[in-house]
Length: 322
Image 1 (tube, rainbow, N blue to C red):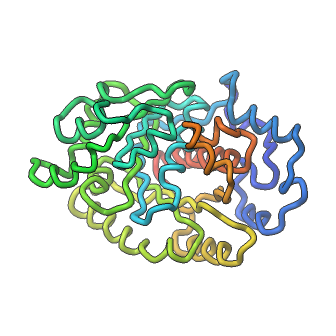
Image 2: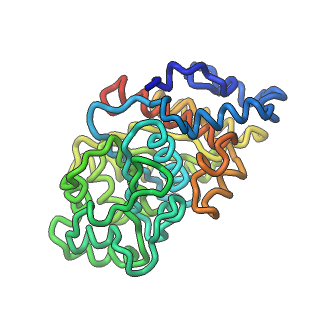
């Protein structure tokens, strides 16, 4: 196995070396960045798809459970969950995705059946069905599994109200899984209800995707306050470890202003990798794929690869949290 950090970067300025000033290049792209040669694009695709399995991202010393949360919809929670999970799985990590959103978009993005009648995360939360009986392998991606969400999950918020230890149902289900994963990603609904509380109680880390627009910042304080309440009363080990900027449009000053505000406020919790607006990222779910497999040479795939690598490296360097 060849560690991915030892491979000579070929992604241009925003490569696998996470320099402090690397984001500056996004505002003044070269022509090669705007229109990469086919050879460079093909090389990126091979590194991202990793068909030989020779390129590996470092595996954490212990399982990392990350809750991907933001009560604002449309900021890229599901897209981030799916693509980070695929990137890590393609490079030697064993990954589980728990779809906790009744819309089931993460299940769609991974092409996992989630129609009515399919065993899903609802059965785990309400009927104590073991997670191992519900998790499905993701076709074409070794070491990646998904616990789907069906429409039944829409009623779980109400049904959980009267359930004993309602906040820790998901945590117990994950802890009881007989197989150990390197990463567990929990895709949360765009709300701060009982489903999201379950995710926050089950996780060690919170990953917050933030869209590079003003509205995305408005509800952030409320989300942080809720995370602090969960930490104080239910899960003292919970940590906001990672902030990922998404839908970055380098043509606008607003995107740059939002980025600087977020970096000034959260410091090194913000990944250096930034996810640009990219049509391939939006197209991929309609084919039941992540952008990593749909168009591995695209800017979107490259950016999510860099974000996944940075998360993996931070986990090794800091023992699981940033």
